[in-house]
Image 1 (spheres, rainbow, N blue to C red):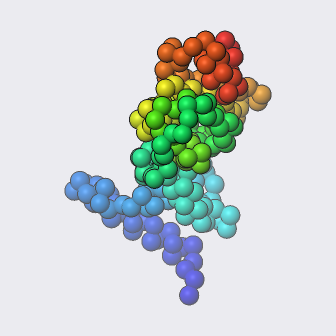
Image 2 (cartoon, rainbow, N blue to C red; image 1 turned 45 degrees about the vertical axis):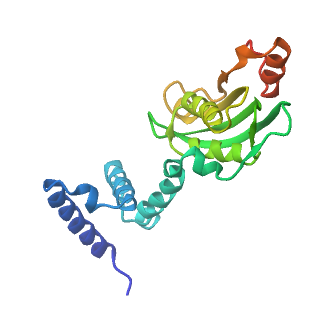
Length: 221
């Protein structure tokens, strides 16, 4: 038989009481699973909003929120090595390799609002390369966390250096941020561009120019 809203409310109160007692004994981490913590956080937000958290449209929102958050921050569960797996191979040449406009979605660590955009990566290999599908895997790994765009850019470059030690690498990320669009300055058409390089100073002028152009950068803007 389906539980009534009052039954669920009573059950939630009981759980809050259990958690309060467990917290007092220093056992909160063991008391709550990740899913329960996300669900409870959503319930508290709904209560604080003043809306009726038990009405039909919101009744299962904590459960849905919990499942969504587990996916949106799933990047904490792997390392770059695990994300790439066996996708590292011997290089068969030293020509430029690039992949552009890999879309991503992330959550701003300051306001927990979404930001999204594209990441472009180019590198000159030394002895090893990564499978082309593994660069999007790395983008996914780092974006599925609470993040800032600048850190994603640096982490992508560092991961490639760690994995394959390329001769040089450039990463360029362009994104829109809801923390600037929905709140604050509320600028709807602004885009943020971040870029980082590794080893470019060791390239010839022509090689450096080609590397930067491969991700849509002139090296000036």
